[in-house]
Image 1: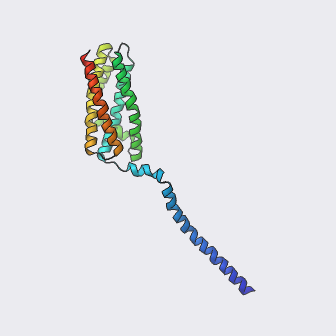
Image 2: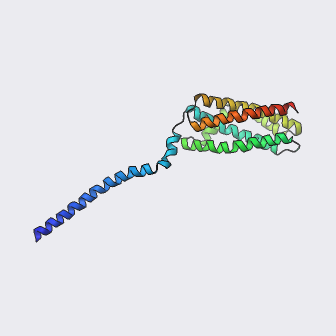
Image 3: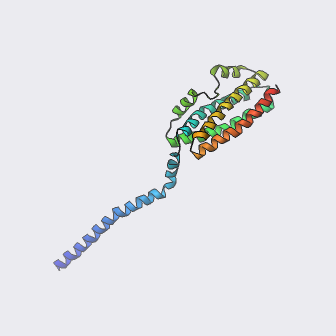
Length: 202
């Protein structure tokens, strides 16, 4: 009986060890499975890795560039006696560029680039950015003078943005960045045409 009991106990122990041995193997198999299952959570990271220096430069420069355009639009929208067509244009610029800023900030987060670095990089590179004196002049101006300063400043601003976007198209690789760059060129080229017509009518 004792021998049989020992044999049964040994068999049970062997089974337990076998199951224990299978367990890590099963978890190991399960972990890759979990990784696969979480592909959706890792996909953005993998996708975010598909960018290069040209993509990053475009985004880091364009965020502060857009921010200043919105600031210019807000200055004009706060004034009285501005031509309705120019008011509509300023609101259009603000409505378009606000969401684009959020989109680009999301890309920077995925790429591991800090917002502070992006802001400084953009400000250092110009690209049609208004000077402090020009911004002060726009803020202080009224009526037709304010309209003229806004249109002239925004034409230069848009021209810089188009040049930056073209550089991204020439050297970038991230499909989302390239799509936005082309959108900037298309939208802002059309707005430049409109602003030149409005200037001619002042």
